[in-house]
Length: 105
Picture (cartoon, rainbow, N blue to C red):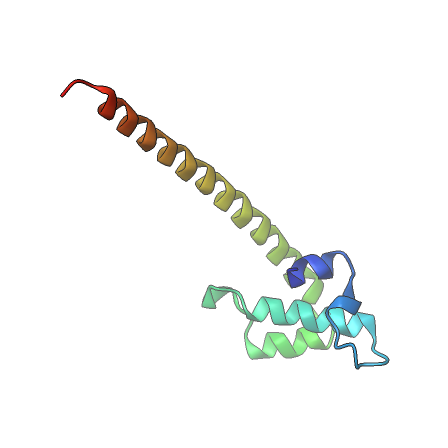
């Protein structure tokens, strides 16, 4: 299961090492959010080290996280649309091949 989904569902116990007896859920959530921001595919979107330190201290993380979630939603919608268009194009290709095969030669 994706870490983002576990985080969204507040299922931190599925993320944290089972051997860790006590932990602060808010700290775990902060660390995971910062880690996810740092692992974005585009280098320009990743926070600078000074921003990371600030976010770990509780400054600016909520705003940056909200921006990231919005961007992820847009990317997911675009991916879904592209996947749908690709599937349609692929189906269209198969139909044309079938038509060509059915014509007299």
